[in-house]
Length: 416
Image (cartoon, rainbow, N blue to C red; front, side, top):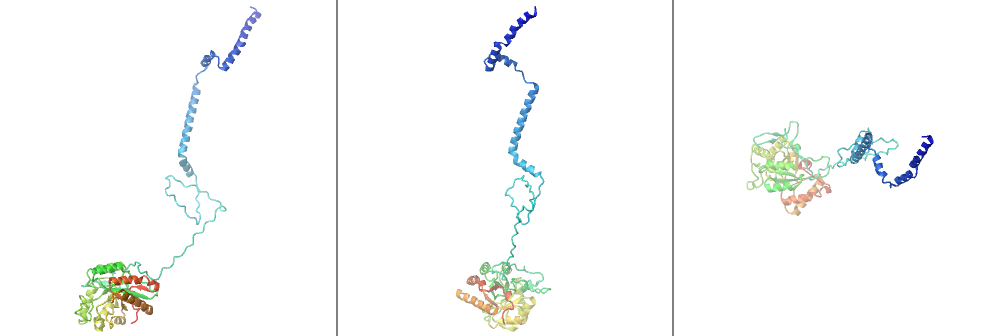
């Protein structure tokens, strides 16, 4: 077969492949309408290669990891930030005069200090000046009426000696005297007129004594009888409340023996040795008192021969004497002053008449005496009306320029 014939055979086939049939099929495929070619296209899709599968798996793992990281950061972002900030070096600058920050009420466990960068000196606000220091006003010279004061505990070593009658006061080897050591303190620099109130006959009635300890201010001096029941307990309670304490020694009255002053009373008819034995019996019943007085010795205190041995004993033991002036002719205070024994005088018996008006009048007279002489002493008994009027009187005493003091604070201040 020659070349022309062969070419003639091939040309129709070429036209057939590139003719209208091919174009029609392409149009149908583009429009999706060639149903005969669709299975062929599906058959021509090849499966993914192993490399492609690995890539797709890596992409999936990466996506899951990123999603988990985002969720974790959302839940722990605050702690992560704090830990990151804690790793950064920081500098804390203290500003002089600035107040320290107030810590939060309940700080979290993982709280870290926020780094503070020091500001340039020119940008720092001026530090607030510290508040001025205001000096506290000096305390008043006078001790307040109800101010608690701790007295020296009794007995003080060196101020007591043992005897068959009990512990007796004495002057210490270094010169300390019981009347000063056991006294209720009062500032010597206070120059106001002074009034001391002494309530005697304490301890005779437990009810009356307990009422006085409960209601009286501690600036009132209390004088206990030595034969009282539970005397040591009463004296300890009184001193524990801040009261200065004396002993009210039983002494012979004018109408003795019809009027009995109590056991072991000092009698003018007895020799000095017997009276000294009786005096030591009384002195040994308690400890912590500053001196003695007597509201019964109207006859005894008017007898110089009977009083002198008592004054000598008080001087030897470092005690003071309060002359209650049960007898206007009493010489106890005068003899004490002449012997160098600390002494005081009762200027008024404030409750000889128990009416309220009469007690108020006696207290007013004490004020007048104190203003005229610098000091005054009133003596009474722990009657309910007496306690009531004293407490009412004390409420305005400081406003009137007068100090209420223990009896030791007026020692040797009154005129003979």
